Figure 1 (cartoon, each protein chain N blue to C red):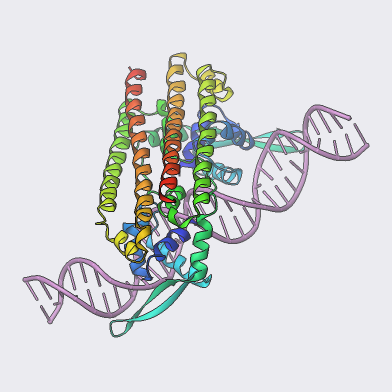
Figure 2: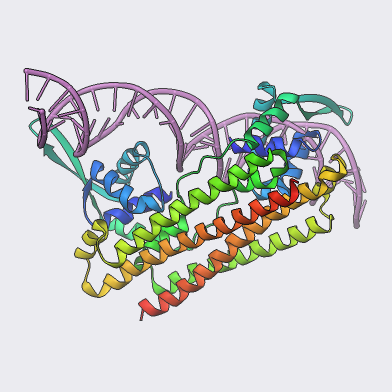
Length: 193
Length: 193
DNA sequence: ACAGCATAACTATGAACATAGTTAGTTGAC
DNA sequence: GTCAACTAACTATGTTCATAGTTATGCTGT
């Protein structure tokens, strides 16, 4: 169900065509909730059917046409209501922890490789998020710019602030993963002598 | 696919009936990879079909019967091979980050509630994992005991050590979440004046 | 005697997600 | 002028997962 709210979040900023949704999604809310286009197109149609969006057809070139989705008052209300409802937490399901728990089954070097890959993955993510925060702070992020343009000036600090806070949380997680994997490398050295 | 390897991990310790798998699963590998029974029963049958398990029927009472699944050499090999393959990382998909990024849409008190719920959830998880680590360290965890009983003594430190390492990683994550949510509470106070 | 609980093993259904492929118009470079 | 890249919008298929319900046996306490 979260995809629906991710799309509503995007469309509170401005009406977008399906294709525009894809492109904006990938550069903003898609960083916190990934989804492929094959999931987005049908979901947009379902949301229109459910009255959360209003699709307005526009001509495209001489023959083609495209549909621009406008969020409806019901859509705004559904989003606000979701925002005001405390989330349910999903049960644990992370392959790295599954693997770590049985690491005695791996060849020591493969175990080390996995830890190095873990560090590399989370380092690169953290870097990406640091850049995202920088672009949010100096307002150079184009998606943020369109959102701010449509919002009253007194909300700008809030809008940018919560996004920065989100990416900081993701960096914190990445840091915890990196430190854990480093300790994992030490543990492998200690146990596989 | 991870469910399959979670089940193989469990069955490397001893042969189990479907129902036993459920019960053991919930108290061991299920903490790192949750799955409901409706997923486990059919997966066990698929694994048997794929030659990873060998199901031996046993009488149960006077009329009923049950099937005990033994891991085959192919099953052991499949598990070891998975353990030696570096994992692919799934894209970000966490509802709390999605929500945090648009927190300006929530009522301030509901935003605070969400942060408090986040702290409560991760505190309780961390506590559970601390207890798990204690039971692994003093060898009072019954699932660990059966696993150790079937393994050579020189592997005991490894087997317990990697499990403790795993739960430590989960505690680290929980701690990071708690600290992030605390900062979130401060931020809400600052922004929603 | 039978209630209640644990054991045992499914089945059904729909939603969510991954992966891959398809069709067709538009724009810009060489 | 034609070819690649981009815009636009799907479609197909299979897997994974959540939620809920079903059927039946055995054991224990009152």
